[in-house]
Image (cartoon, rainbow, N blue to C red; front, side, top):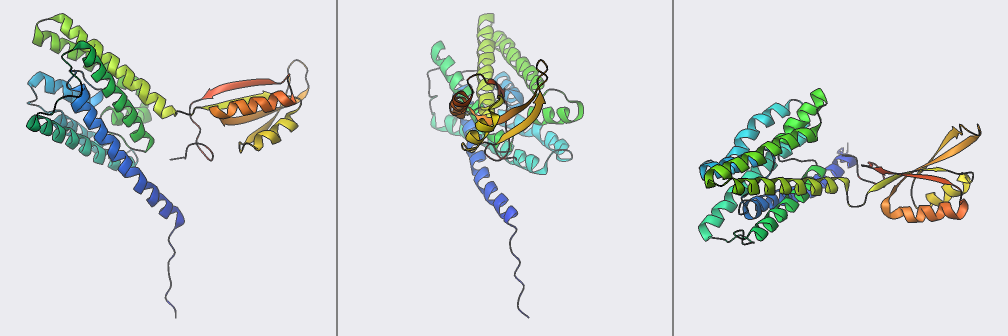
Length: 313
C-alpha cells in the first residue's frame, strides 16, 4: 500500500503566514515606542499614560532608582496571569512578549544613552523645543500603539484592566484610561512643583503632559479608525433599479430593503451601501445621473469588517 500523504490545512497555512508578517511589525512598533519614551518623553520631563506613565513618574521621583522598565514588568506579571483565564490566549501571549520587549527596549536604550552620552534629538532646555519633543513622542506613541492593537497585540497595563472590566461590567474602556492618565499627569505636576519649589514648573509639566496625552489619544483614535474612513449610504429613489447595478460596477455591495413611505403610503425600495470615502464622489455622480430628486443620507461608520474592507481578526 502506498504511503498516505496528509495535506496541510490551507486555513492554518494562511494563518501561519499572516502571523509571520504580523509579529515582526508588532516588534518594530514596540521598539519605536521605547525610542519615544527614552528620547522624546524623558528629555521633555513629561509622562506617558497607563503603567508606563506610573513607571516614569516613579523614575522621576526616585532619580531612576526605580527604573520605568522594572515597574512595567512587575505590574504586568499579575495582570497577565489574571487575563490568561478569561482573554484570548493569543492576545495574552502577544501582550507578554511585547511587554517584555518594551521593557527591555527602554532599559537598553537608557543604558546606551548613559554610556555613550547620546544627546536628545531636541534641546529641551528651551521651552519651545521641549514642547516639540513631547509632541513627537506623543505622535510616535499614538501611531505605534494603534498599529499594535490593530495587529492584535497590546503593551498590557491598563489595557488589560480595561478589557477585563469591560467584559464583566460593560465599563467604558476609554474612561478608565482617561482617569488614570489624568491622575498621572497631575501627580507629575505636584512632584515637579515640590522638587523645584516653584509651582509654575509643576503647572507647566502637568499641562505639557496633558497635551501630549491628548495628542497621543487623537493619533491613536485616528489610526484605529483608519486613514480611509468608511461611510454608510441610504438612498431613496424611484430609479433604484438603475442606480444599484451602476454601484455594483464599483465592486461595492448593494442591499435592497423594502420599505413604505409614511406620508405617501407607497411601497419603496431603500438602497443600502457601505463604501469608502474616496468612492463617495463616484456614487454621488451615479445617483445624480439617474435621479436628481433622490434622497441620499451619508453616515460616518466607525469600522467595517469583511470582504472589501478590514479583515475580520
